[in-house]
Amino acid sequence: MKDIRRIGVLGAGTMGRGIIQLFAQSGYEVYSYDAVDGAVAKAVDFVSGLIERAVDKGRLKREEADVTLARIIPCSDVAEFAGCDLVVEAIIENIDAKRAVFEMLEGVVASDCILASNTSSLTVAEIASACKHPERVAGLHFFNPVPLMKVAEIIAAVRSAPEHIAALKTLIESCGHRGVVAEDQPGFLVNHAGRGLYTEGLRIVEDQCASPEDVDRLMREAAGFKMGPFELMDLTGLDVSGKVMSSIYEQFQQEPRFRPSPLVAPRIAAGLFGRKTGEGWYRYDNGQRVDSPTAETPALAGTIAVWVDPDADQCAALGELVSAGGARLVEQPADAELILIQPWGWDVSIYCAERDLDARRCVAVDPLPGLDKHRTLMISPVTEARCRDAAHALLGQNAAVTVINDSPGFVCQRILATIVNIACNIVQRGIASVADLEDAVRLGLGYPAGPLTLGEQVGGERILAILEAMELQTGDMRYRPALWLSRRVRLGQTLLTAEAPRSGRG
Ligand SMILES: NC(=O)c1ccc[n+]([C@@H]2O[C@H](COP(=O)([O-])OP(=O)(O)OC[C@H]3O[C@@H](n4cnc5c(N)ncnc54)[C@H](O)[C@@H]3O)[C@@H](O)[C@H]2O)c1
Image (cartoon, rainbow, N blue to C red; front, side, top):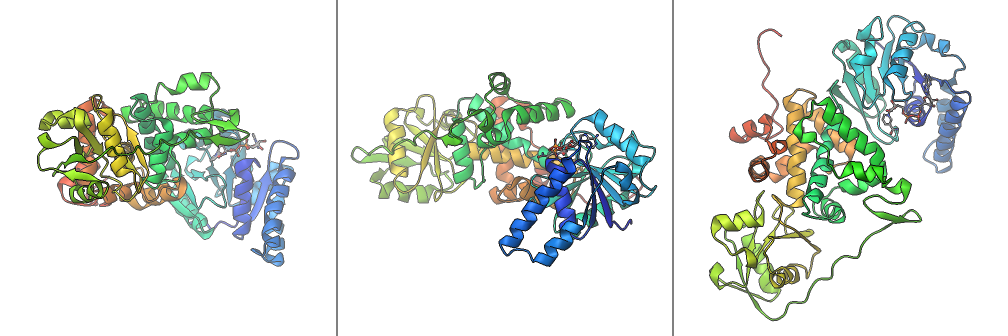
């Protein structure tokens, strides 16, 4: 395995700067070159500024700062990369430009130098095929800002030498980052696993089940995510995320799981990119998001007779909650003015039709987040306003409530099941190991846990039931459960159970 000491960084833009800083801080000699005059000097100034600030704040000793900065070697000619053990390319995301620099680099560096690309969306094998020795080429995908995002994806292209992949992993982990290894597949790990949040969030809005703002709020307050899909799109810019959605869909040969939403193109055409254009899914006033006011909790008019479905997961707790709020519990749905149900994966209409319950008096409560957190109520097209308001009044006294329209699964159920299903498919296809996928998503996307762990928290059986119900109700292939999921559920195993090693050849 190659011992990496000297690293060349080609391109000194947003990513190049971060990569330079990370390697210099971790004790490596870093050579920096950029095609544009002055770009390297600007990058060095930028990194020095950050390091000086750390000294001022007492987070770094003066001597350490001086040693770190002395490790950065600005180059005026790429020929100065000749003695490097590794070159990391971080130039513009263009296949022809990348192939040209890789071909050029092979003529500059020694025969055992590793060449890595920071590409986020191109096929590493296509870049490598410009080289005489494609086995020396791999992907090394960092996230912005590089020193703070503690994970890098190491992409093993079809011809990459395994010892180079191992050397890159050792290097990344020596910098205090987690090095996750992924196959050269569209979106690698993080951008692939991150699809579900967007596709399902958009689908929920497309079907008029909830507003973008409500979806975001539920993902934050009920599911524990840092951000919901719509605020994320506004932050990244819909012009950028829209392209990623289409490109991953096309690269996966129009896999229905990644089918982009028709809501996106007209918004891009209208310039509703998000924060950078002042309007996206939200409006921004002087950079500040303008949120719509939350709905007031209605007052309960007198006592109301409530029947709680005995099949509800939280039947007892729901009963106690509504009684404390002033409801009178009844034994039969026929005697109730309000019927409370807790379906997994089913909408109110079908759940009621199948059990002969009166949908006009029915409101569903999402069992997934539990009753302590933000509560989601779901109504059918015929649920009467007085029943909706009574449920909101009873459940909104000591917690926030969001009311959504009928949907095959509540917001959190749909999005979480989609995320878990995509993750199951990633490991089924051997794109990464279970541990690498889990860490990549946690560190790269900031989800509260890895996607398979999130699935375990809900329960594999539940996730499978949600997906099967969604597929049945919508007829949409995007919800078909991954084999990884259905096999493990049927075998009574956790979703984190790896494939058994195959014996024999190949
Ligand atoms: N910005 C991100 O959040 C992010 C995250 C992960 C990966 N990436 C990937 O990293 C790469 C760089 O992205 P960025 O955001 O740093 O771009 P950037 O535009 O900020 O920087 C690119 C730099 O490369 C230089 N450059 C262009 N052609 C060159 C050449 N032939 N030789 C030497 N230098 C050249 C440019 O002058 C510029 O300074 C892209 O492949 C991108 O997809 C970006």
